[in-house]
Image 1 (cartoon, rainbow, N blue to C red):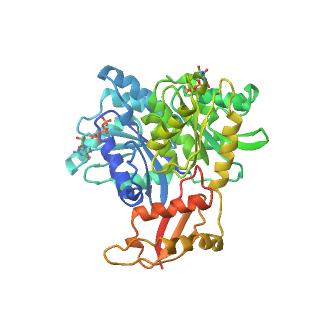
Image 2: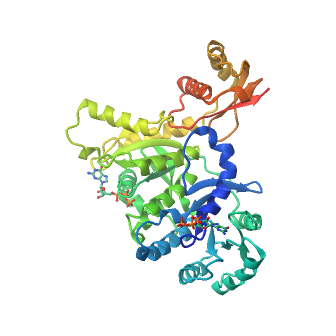
Image 3: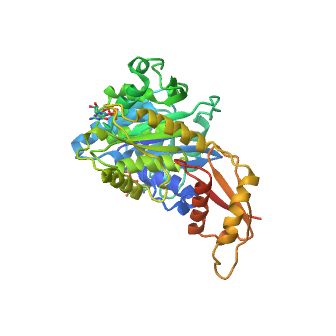
Length: 434
Ligand SMILES: Nc1nc2c(ncn2[C@@H]2O[C@H](COP(=O)(O)OP(=O)(O)OP(=O)(O)O)[C@@H](O)[C@H]2O)c(=O)[nH]1
Ligand SMILES: Nc1nc2c(ncn2[C@@H]2O[C@H](COP(=O)(O)OP(=O)(O)OP(=O)(O)O)[C@@H](O)[C@H]2O)c(=O)[nH]1
């Protein structure tokens, strides 16, 4: 779990440019191979060895100019609520604007770290102009140029300095997050699962990281539910705000071991749900897909379920080894099954396979179907071992790791899945030199 940093500011100040600069450097290495298109507004970055998630709030503003201002205010409020630190970006070319002042007013009241970044400071003349932003009353500022990179190092130094330290997870309990689009039935699901009385237990009003988890004991399972507080707080925010659910999801996903992704069967597994799915996948979280409101689907024939399943699998390729459960919160159909499956996925995610066993199973498969020769080079895989990470990652040691292509890695992943149950869990395969 890494800290969350939100970039706020009015349109056109250069938030996306800055976001891309921070994300790309790392993604070129990490995500290029996975073939998953990256989210334009959410990504991971790191500086001086500290990881953090970066959210560009700007991309979520839609609509005409007159709704802009209100939207931005709402987003700033959300960012304040959900992020661990905020980068407030302004534009030296335009100078201080009324909207900047409004945002600054909101930010002056928060006790989370706020870093004022004055963008487009491409040269010394502009550095001098930046002084006027002291008027925002936010103290020290960082003059940067997102385009040429100058000043961004100092800003990042200061940022990682103020980020909270990662906490060791002392709890051995599974942490489940219920995520999905607005109105999918998340609160109803949690209510049904926990019973009304539990809904209002615990949780201190604050949104400190410590109060993210609430412990439950239900149906013989013990688990932590991540971020139910957020669901309770929802009245504060307009429900149809997509940004709200994204921000909410990001935070809940980051804190979870397994994500229960809930969607409305009558609305389908659309792009937004898929985004949430990839968020979980990219964070190496366990996933269970819950098709809710199944009671509303009419004329269910034996084929209907199959067709739904197929459609979902198509949108989540190649990571299709994921449990899909058809539930109705209203009639309580299969909600126990949902929880039980989440527990299984949790176990799959923490599964450790002994090296001996792993090699006994995998080496004969590899011998039977070795990596195809590449540029006339033959790759010899010698052994495989599971890495000591909190989620399944496997290193295959061989003479020429750079010649093993993506399809063969996928083949290895599939064989691992066939032989050891990793249902619902992203599995990573690395090739290492030996
Ligand atoms: N001179 C200069 N221009 C910049 C810099 N950073 C961004 N720009 C330009 O500013 C314009 C807006 O940049 P974006 O990154 O799209 O701004 P944004 O804040 O993400 O805008 P929204 O997506 O509308 O919220 C673009 O034309 C960028 O090329 C910079 O450091 N210097
Ligand atoms: N027919 C039917 N309706 C359901 C079911 N589950 C939830 N609903 C209804 O769907 C609506 C939305 O449910 P909520 O639980 O508020 O949804 P949510 O995902 O928490 O919504 P947000 O908090 O806005 O993100 C409510 O009117 C529920 O009664 C179901 O299984 N079947």
